[in-house]
Image 1: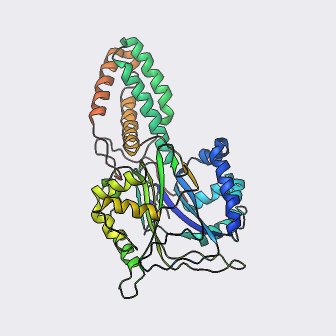
Image 2: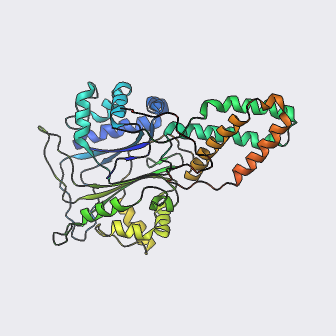
Image 3: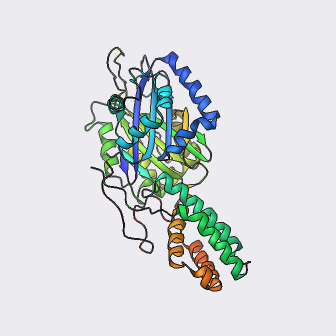
Length: 198
Length: 217
């Protein structure tokens, strides 16, 4: 069992919601999905590779027959899966400090959610509703979300210069090369080992 | 479609685990034991099959009681949660797994209710579709690149960094030589194979000593 692989942490959380509140949350997610500027804080946090919220209605847990008993639940459940860089404490601290309003808007419909500020009580709640990952794979364990974004910028700049390099005079190439270095130099970060977490 | 963000598909599958008190150890423990033995590097089944950015498998024992005044309730089944961020939709992705790593699919999902086996691909896809739960909101930091594109970009980033470091000042001193060496470098880089998914070490050619480190807590 491990929630960590390289530089990525897998978080799983499940919280109960009264079914009538689920529809409010669905509406909020619909708006969040269609008005991209509302996602800016999430994007600018820049240490989340992938995250998703999944509402499982109380009667929608897969029932496949073969003697499986159907679930009899009063609550719908909100599942949250996140793949982030850094430690659990850093993640929750950043969420609480930067995304407090957004988080409250999403989780306030869950039972007993205390709010994302103050952070100590928020952490207690997350620790209670979190469950551990049994197996975790990432295709690029040594890279963070920022490393990936940077690498794709370098790749695009490199492809541009490669495509035109042979058609330029040496002097024109030197100018193009310096432009390439200027455009890429902020994106040449090291992707080394993951930091040691104690 | 909420499961899709750009070209990345967010697949969430909840497979009920067989509850049979005559079986020892229980099916959920057998899944856990098998998952604990699976490699997570380039030998991982998700590295051998195409198109997985990140994937997790979790045995969910029960829902969580958050305390009064909420009602306490329990699931009648345990569920295997399969959450993956991949380059294709469910039928193509599951087909890829069934073709490349059927033995791992069978070893894990044979403990789940109604699993038809990896041999019958159409039955397998139908089974996974029956277990799929639609994502309500899906966020992806990079949503327009495939796994091979990302692995190659990371390789390029490291190689370009070394090239720039080793050719400082040459644009002014000897532009013709810089141009020749750049074109040779670009050709060599393009000819290199894409690094394997899941590999935690850089290849020996581009490996460098770590210059920084320490606590981050």
